[in-house]
Length: 152
Image (tube, rainbow, N blue to C red; front, side, top):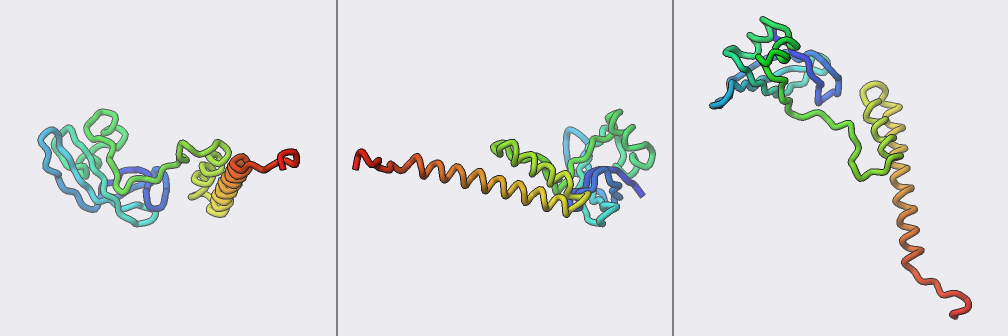
C-alpha cells in the first residue's frame, strides 16, 4: 500500500494521507510520467495525481522503498499535480482590503469551524454590498444636477 500526503481538494484537509489505488504510465518522450488514482484518508474521495519520475519504477514502488520527502528532495519523484485542483485561499485582486480580510478569514476557518466561516463570509458580503451601495449613491448624487433656488 503506497501512501503520499497532499491537500485534499474535496474536504480541504491539509497534508492528509492519500492511498494510491491504481496507476498507469502515461506515454511521454522526455520523462517517465505516471497517472495515479489516489483516495483521501479523511473523506474517501478520489483524486488524479500526476507524478514525474526520474528513474525506472512506478510511484507505488518508489514510495514503498523511500520516504516521500526524500524522493522529492533528491528528484527521484516530482511533487504530484493534483486534479481537481485545490480551492484558492486568496480573494480576487480587485477586492478592497476590508472585504479581502473578511473573505480570507472565512476561507481559513472553513475546515476548522464552519460557523465562524459562515459569519466571516456574511461580513464580506455585507461589506461589499455596503461599499457598492455607497458608490452607487455617490454616482447618482454627482450625476444629477439639482437646481439651486437661485437658478430656479
